[in-house]
Structures are given as structure tokens and as C-alpha cells.
Length: 575
Image 1 (cartoon, rainbow, N blue to C red):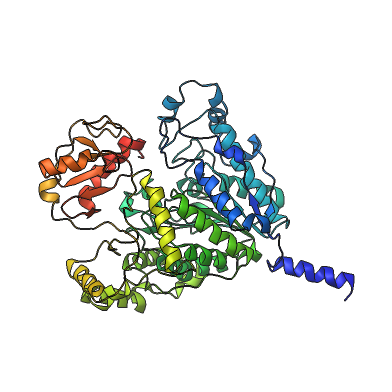
Image 2 (image 1 turned 180 degrees about the vertical axis):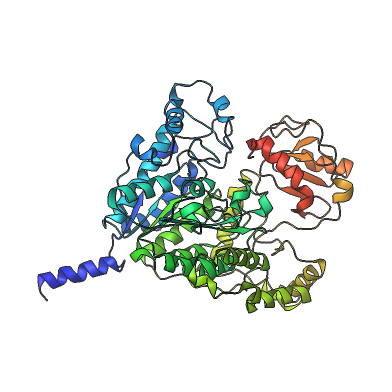
């Protein structure tokens, strides 16, 4: 074989992702400087990127990838999507003394003397990685960066986000390299309001977001996260929101979204580049997301995206707050980008009816914009009908919804149990909803009737194993007596325990509104229940609601006013 032929084969292998260095990684220790001095247990911690990077090194991924050099973003690049005022505010932070007062002007933001330097470094890293993919230096890549970006608006930071990295990178390669069409897939559990608004009238960018909506009560709590918001002007039809109104049960729901909606539309759109706003807070065990995507799920979703844009895929870390979950998930994504064999897919059952409703809402809304959707008639979808019939008859539907996730990470039950143990350890640090992943009964869909729950219980008694996840109950027999109106002065999320003065992890009683510390501190709220028999309490740490009588977490419409008040007390108003 001639030297020219050998060189040709090598280039083909690189394009097929079989080469050692086709996947790029960007990371910089400087992004750890931004931290919350007021709350050392704040979920957006520097440990997020440290743990991910350590896991990538331990798994051998860093050695197999091309390391992309980090750099700071320039003012010119930031101004592609942000205002001059936004840049000026952040660039002058190091000169300010009252950063906490400045932060209170914004929604869910903390500030540090190094916030600007950290954020410019993070945005610059994403731009440099994206440029390397577009120019062919690498085929795809991962940006292990923080703080996240997808909530940041043109004029202000929001939701832990300072600069909006993905839109900056998209605008950069569009201007500098004439990239025509870009698909942005946002699988963070929260809606990426900032990304949506920056491209809402732009037909060159298709924004596709899969997120929890909860009828407008899930952060960021704005109506524009709903499926009815499709874009404006020339951008109409290029904004697709798949909005969960019930917490997703995980892989099946997301893969149904990909196969029924995202991939058909993406093939028709035919992008030149795929950007992934990769929040990992929908991952199994995340204390905020309450969803259950496994590493296997992330690997398969990434693999599907590689079939687009000649494999040019850039994955950018957004949210994700359980350190074990985000590390294992990012390793799965890295393996998929490198072309490793996919972990075995375990069929855990049909998608939940809530997910199918959300998917079909988006299909119905966008069928007039995309030819691939016009032939779909979700109302007559046999899978959707069969699922609802199964749920209504209270028999086989419930059986389909409680298949185990054992083996879904590509390993055996021992590996999964070890992962769950580490997830619990991480979550206990700041009062997680997931108090027991390995041993608790799973309530798969929060809308299931008492009849369906009895069926699930019977199935378990007959030897059927359950999913290793905790979902809050949708019903509680103690709300009438235990849930009292909010006090006139509202809630104080920073109130100390009335017994010991603890300020780290406290609960408020929803009957008398006394504040006491958790069982992981000195158990004063448990003592309060024993003395008063007030059943319902709300955590100021993670905004979950617990019923002592049900011995379970609760989530339904009865608590929306209290959850909204607690959210505003903790983070400020999102409206």
C-alpha cells in the first residue's frame, strides 16, 4: 500500500471516530475559584467539575482524548449575545465590596470576587472547543466547565448562570466559519430560558429542550417553557419545548422523545453542528431534578446525536448536583463520543403516560412546521392508547412500569448498588430528596390511582423487583388537617432551628410554621412531630415536603403555594 493510501485510510479512520484523538476535552482548574462564601453547601460547587474530571481520568478517558487549550472569552465574543451593561456589571465585580447585596438583585445568583474571571474562562473554553470541532481538529468534544450558562439572559445572570456559553460559541462559529445551521439540544432538567430567548427569532438555530415544567411551578417558573412557545417571526417553528408535567421516570421517556420527535425533526433540519447543553440534573439520584436517567441513557442519547452533522457534537456541562451521578453520566457520554461499544440497553418498560402526553403536545404543535411530523397522529398512537388502558385497568400497565433498572448502567446489580450508595452519600450532604435509593418502594408515576398502587404492591409481594428510585407521592390523606395557610409574614428560609440555632439544614412545620433541624443534625423536627403530631414539613435545604404519617415525600397541587413561597424565600422571586 502506498504512503498516500495509508494516509487516506488514517483520515477515514479519524472521521469514523476510531482514532485515538478524535474527541476533545477542555478543563481548567481556574474555574474552581467561583464559589458561594455565604453557603458552603450550595449545590453549584467547584467540586462538580473536580469530580467529573477525576472520574474521566480514572476511567482513562483523558488519555484517549485531545486536550483543548483553555482561554478567556473576549468582550467582543460575549457581546454576540449579551449586552454592554451585562459585561460591565460582571467585569467590575472585583472592585465591589457588597457582592451579596448585588446578587440579591438577580434570580438565584451568588457572586464572588473571582466570578468574572471564572466565567470568562468557562465561556472561552466552550468557544475554543467548538472552534476545534468546526475546523476539524477534533470530531467532537466535551467541555467540563462551570458556572453553567443556559439560564443567563442578555442583560443579567440568572439561575447559577453568568455568561451563556453555548449561544456565544454558536454565534462565534457562525460569524467566523460561516456555519449555517446549528441544533442545540438542552437536556438539563430545567428549561434553558436564556438560550431560547437568544435564538427565538433565528431560523438558523433549532433549539430543542426537554425539561420539567410541572404546569409552570418548576424552576425557572415561566410560561415560556411550555410547548406552546414555538419561536417568533422567521424563527417560528424552530423552538421546541418538551415540557414534563410529571417527573420523568427516566431513560424510556427520554428515548421516546428522541425517537418520536427529536431525531425526525433533526434529520429534516440537517444541522452543520450539534451543541448539547448538557445539564446532568435529570440523572438518577440528583437531589433537585427528581428524574432518573441512567448513564446508559446518556450514552445512547449521545450516540443518536452523533448520526447528525457528520458527528460534529459539542457537549457542554450545565447543571447537575449529585457528584456521583454527574461523574458517571459524563463518563458514559465520553465513551459514546469516543465510539466505545454502547452499554446494553435494558428494556425497563413503555414510556410513562405523562411523558407521552408531553411528547404528543409538542408533535401536535409543531406538525405544521415539520414535514416529518405531519403524518403522525398522536391521538391515535396505539402505544399511547395501550398505555392509558393499562393504567386504567390497574393491571398489566402497572406491571410494565415497575421493571427493575438493574444492569442499566452496563454493569451488574453490585455495580448499580455501589453507584446508589455513593449517590446517597452525596445527597445527604445537603438534605436530598433521595433518602434511600436501594431499599425504598418506587412510585413510578405520581398520577397513579390507589388501585394502581395496590397492584404495584401486589406485584412486589409476588417477587417483582422495583426501580431503585424514590418518587414523591401524589396523594396524602393528611393535607386537610396538617396543611395550614401561610403566615402573613411569609416564610424565612434562613431561619435557625428554634432549639439549637442550626442554620444549615432545617425544616418548617406546615401546621404551626416552627422551624427545626433535620434528623441529620439533631432531630429537633422529628421531636417536634412526636410532641405535636403535626404531619407535614417542608425542607429549606431542598424544598421537598415530607409527611411523617405517610412516611414518604409528597408532591401535588395542594402544596404549590407553599413551594412557591419557599422558593422565593430561598432564591428570590422568579417572576
